[in-house]
Structures are given as C-alpha cells and as structure tokens.
Amino acid sequence: MEKEETPKWLEDLQQRSWEPEVLLSGIVLFGMFKVPPLLDKALAFFKSQVFSSTTDIDNLVGILKLGIYWLILGLILHLICRGIWVGMVGLSYTFPNGVNTERLKYKHRFKERVEKIPPFQRIIINLEKLCSSLFSLSFMLFMSTVGAYLYFFILLVVPFFIGIAFQGSLNFTDTRAFEVYVVVLLVIAFMGLIDFLTLGFFRRFSWISKIYWPFHQIISTFTLGRYYRPIYFAFVSNSNRWVVFLLLSVFAIGSLFGLDEVTNDVYDGSSFSRLSFWHGGDQKLRVFTGYYEDQNEELFSYQAQIPSDIIDGNVLRVFIPAGVVKEDSIRAYVNYDSLVAASKGMTRDARDMPAIKKFYHFYLDDSLVREYPLLYHFRLKTNQPGYLAYIDIAQLPQGMHTLEVGGPPSMYRNRWAFIPFFRELDASERKSINSTQKEDDAYFQVKPGLPR
Image (tube, rainbow, N blue to C red; front, side):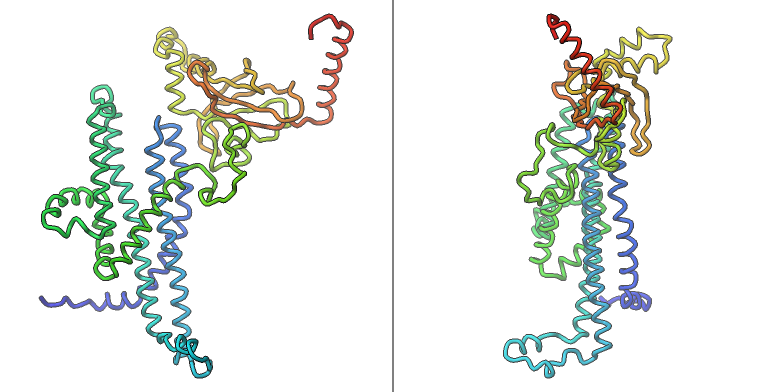
C-alpha cells in the first residue's frame, strides 16, 4: 500500500502549529474561566424553579465544570511549556553552540552531567512534541469528561423528562423498569471506563470483543467518542503504555475526588485544609454568608436572605426565595384543591397569598412572629422570585439576635434557616428603650404585689 503524500499546506501548518495552539490556548482559557460562574447561575435557576429533586442536575453540572477545570489545567501547562519552548528557540539563536562545557571547568560527575545535556535543537524538537501532545491531551480529557456528561444526560435525564411530560398516562419515573434501566446504564458505563483505563482490554480477545462490541457502540455514540478517539489511539499506540495508563488513572481518580469538590457548597480548597478547630458543624455556631444580601452574591441562600448581619433600623426585611419543593408542600399543607374549589371568583393573588403566609413561619429569638406583611418580590441581583416579609424589631434591644425560618411544625421537624444578626441602635433609640424599661421597673416597684 502506497503511503499517502502529505499536502504542502499541511506540512506548512504542522511546522507552524505553535501559532494556532498559543492563540487558541489564550482565547479558550479566557472563556473557560467565565463559564463556571455561569453554570452556577444556571444551576441556581434549575434548583429553585424547575426540579423538585436536585441531585441529578447537581452532578451533571459538576461533571461539566470538572471537564472545564481539566481543560484549564492542560492549557495552562501547555502555555508554560510553550514559554519554555520559545525561550529555547531564542537561546539556540543567541548561543548556537549550546553549552560550553570547557569554560565551566566542572569536574567528575558534575562535568558528566553537563555533557549529557542534549543539543538545543533536540531539546526544541522534544519540547515541540510535548507542547502539541499537551494541547491535544487537554481537549481529549475535556471531551471525555463532557462525553460522560452527555452519556448520562441523553440516556438518563431525557427519559426522566419524558416521564414527567407524560405523567399520568406514562408514569415512567415511578416504575421498577426505570430502576433496572438505570442499573444497566451504570454497568455499561463501568465497562466503558475499565476499557478506557486499560487501553482497550476488552478489545484484545476475540470472544470478549464480540460481546463488548454493541456496548462499545452505545458508549462511543453517546459520549462523542469519534471526536477524541483519534487522540486516544495515537497516545496508546505511540507512547509507553504504562505512562498512558498512569496518566488516565490519575485523570479518573482526580475526577472522582474533584467532582465531590465542585459539587459541594464549601469554600475553595476545604478538602485539603488542615485546620482542626474550624468546623462549624453546629448551625447555631456558624454564619453562612449567603443569608446576607451585602456579603455573598454568588453562593446565596435558597432559604432566606436579610440585608446584612448588622441591622440598624426598626424593620427587618426578609426575602424568601420561591421553590418548587416548597410549593408542593404548600399545596399539601393547605389542601390546595379544596381551597381552589372553595374560592371561586377570587383572584389567584387573593387566594394564594394567605396560603403562602400560613405556610411560612418566622421566629425572632425563638418566639413566633404572628403579624407581618408578605409581598411578592423578584430579587434582581440573584434572579430569584420569592416573597418579601417586613418584620417589626423596634422592641429588640441592642445586641445579638436570631431569625429562624421554617415551615409548619406538623410537617417539618427542623427549621430551614438560622440567621444571626446584630441589632445596632443609635443614642436616641437606646435612650427610648432604656426609659421604657425604667417605667416598667417603676411600675412594679409601686405595685410589688403584682406578678411580674
């Protein structure tokens, strides 16, 4: 078979491949750093307004973010190696003879080590191969991670949506068949992962390859394998197999631990922290910044938000984000179908707002707040629809206080949000409250027989 002649334009492009590599690395890196915050905003929308169970969407967005982080890491390493490559190209022009070992006057092993340094031309060629390999490998890891995302999205989430769309006539999400279907998908995915890490173990034996072939076709189709398969086979067939196996193993293990890191709402690097006295396991001993509108606009709360942790007015404004899970609970608590039947002729606002107000419970210093206005509100900073409550705190003294938000005690054992805040008074307010307290004390001093 005659070897196909390489076109002239392709040879020129291969010799100048560093130009598009550096350009693409810079552009893609700039864009990739902006994608995770956008994914977090999309996740917040789906968690509050679309899904009643958010575990699946959390995992899917986490996988996509993980692939982006792998791409960012690979492109950063590529740019570093390209920087070294450019430096070596410049040195080869400045010092065409390379290292002058005679002028160094090193002795024994030091001299032998310097003499083993290869010529600059060979170093440049090796760096060129390394840079191109890193560039290709970065996109292969990214595509394989996104491929895993698409595999589960197409074969698991899409049927889930179909089940929701036909709920009532096709109650697919509640059947035993769906559970079996999920198990089969996981088994096929595990087989594909083993084959991927072992560099094609199932394909090397005649009878196993025949059995594995249909499963491979399913995996390859839904993971977009045709786009990264050439890169994968190029590394497997031209590199040390143990090195490739070690690299893919690090990728798999790193993805496993990295997915847990990116899907948990914790501060960056908490998994590697060695702090032993900082834990905040007790809700009443920690302060979540997402409860305060002036502190955290990225990791905001889905339960409740107040303006700040220091309140200097007589009114505490509380924003309660709306959510599909809470709406299901409201319907069950007020027996919504009966409420609709009994309130014919009323507007939706007049019918629904009392039900919403009946459902939510506010506690100031563990005392139930019984009177407060509640209004519909859309918070622009976080793009959250919800409800706005105004709670009178004029009688609270200066100092630390707590606001707790929960649902009906008959439905919820625990309250959803525990929000500490500091009430700050100016001089006139402190004087007014102190005078009121003195009048009360004077009253009981005049009438000591009355129970206080």
